Length: 207
Image (cartoon, rainbow, N blue to C red):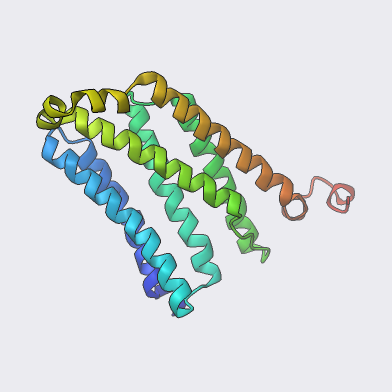
């Protein structure tokens, strides 16, 4: 079955690695925190690798096209939520990211169920890439701050990474981009959305 193809297995692995990352990240042991970075890097590798496999061996499927961005949303949403939980990032920016991604995922799922699948746009892929960049940036700084050896040797660099103004600015920017891509998604697919959720027959037939 194509659902159990290797690319989809790698995508599923990325989702399963998310609670492992959260457990290691929230540990009080600096060594486990460092290991959480390795887990998240490996998750990113599976993202690249399953995409490469799908293109290289022709494993591109409708299910895979939906499942892969869903896995990205699970990883990013969980990571930003745990950042907010320990006070690293402003909560309102995180909830913009999480609510937008949940809303779009629900719409895509329902469209898929109704036989009107919607592909991920290049703009949305750019948004996801930006989320990952900010996510790793904060993680590197936090691990450096939480590791006495790194803090003593590279304290000035760590302080730059963990500057509150820098982090706040990055989160505001990525939240704004995330919100914008959500609005663009809804606008570009308004006809499909009207067919899925017709307010009235007249509204559904508009345009």
